[in-house]
Amino acid sequence: MTSADCSIEPTLLSRYFFTDTVYTCWEDILNNTKGSLFMVAAMAAFSIEDMLIKSAAETTSIGLILALFGLGGMLIFILLTWRKGETVLHPAALSRPILLRALCEVIGRFCFALAITLTPLSSASAILQATPLIAMIGAALLFGEQVGHKRWLAVLVGFVGVLMIIRPGLDGFEATSLFAVIATLGFAGRDLATRAASPVLSNMQLGVYGFFVLIPTGLAIMMYQNEPLQFSTTAATQILGAIVFGVMAYNALTIAMRAGDVSVVSPFRYTRLLFALALGILIFGESPDLLTLLGSLLIVLSGGYTLVQTRKRTTTNNIPNAA
Image (cartoon, rainbow, N blue to C red; front, side, top):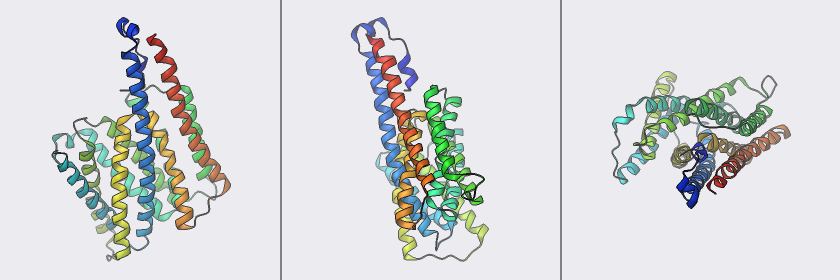
């Protein structure tokens, strides 16, 4: 169900009884609201996961972190899949959208792990906020989602806020921040592939496949680095915590992308920046300047306006048509 479905002219019968069109429109609004709330919850959990991974990376290699993170997450999702009476291996797992999703997952996870390790958490998270813009463009081009000019403008304003934070070409922009840029492309591709995935695959099955691909990725990185393993109890606890929050975030994100329109739900990724700024300041002693804070505010306001504008357009354009 998309917001475009609400704009369909109602039949004479539904026009008389007020039922079908009103139900369709409010169902669409509720789905978008549900998706937005799950997106915010996912971003909070992802930020905590990032904090724990960044902390663990101080004493543990990225390859080992990814491998253990993938293993733990995969096992949890396998148990959840069995609990629902579903099979772990499904023929649709080899479909093109799922394979593309796996590739994007690897690119996004690996590059962002490098980004938060080599750069401030707040900076890497700020660059990641370009993901909704890319996802919205992809949704409009690939899925034909209707995006009005006001929502386009709102998302572009949010992107300006991102540029205010990263300041490309200035002293505040680091070369290692390019890892976050690549991660942004990977995560946007993953979201779009999730939308295109077969509906026969549950959120739990998608979680199994998404975490599984991190295991060979991490092992390959370890073999390439060829460094002695260093693993402490503290690092183990941090990775375990990252797994728990990662699973929570992963499931919430999948629900969000399937519940509402990508172009509506995606802007709420911007809330991840607020969580990252708070954790960066409180845990790692980062000191974002005034321009960074103003850019963050601009991003959040633009994301909120996008949802409000979508609800207004859906309600005013369609519910009166039932009269």
